[in-house]
Image 1 (tube, rainbow, N blue to C red):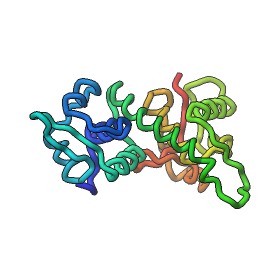
Image 2: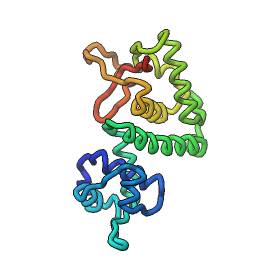
Image 3: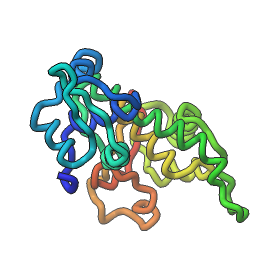
Image 4: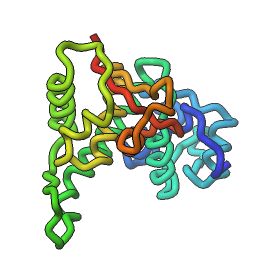
Length: 210
């Protein structure tokens, strides 16, 4: 199980438990978050030691494990397929907490050596604003594709992982589109380097929704 991709409901359950940081009953997961964790999905998470499940007064209670928190991060970075508004909200719930944490710790993790480019700590909202401004500089109006190469060239002072996480959040919320190019052979080395990987697919085009 640990080597297999988790289902959307399994990942969503891990996100909720990670965010709350406390045990949650099965009924609470269903009523408050709209997540029905089936016996198969529950058993898979327990067998993989991603959550602990116990029975209290004939009700299941779930607690996320450290391995579960790490797996939630791993799965979201691979890309979560979402098809409902609630699904997007849950994915963004994770991304928000991850990005805030990353922005808060970036000063502490600053290397001692003087880097060629100074990376300043910024919030996810600020990063999205910068991405939108960069897009507007490249092309007038919304709905037109731009290359990730040109976009990243205007964002060199922002951490690459932070860029990717914010772009994924924007895509999951339906605010932007991110896709691979049709003819990969036309790409230059710098285009491959600038690609954002979602799932296992490198994507080289970005556009803000019309």
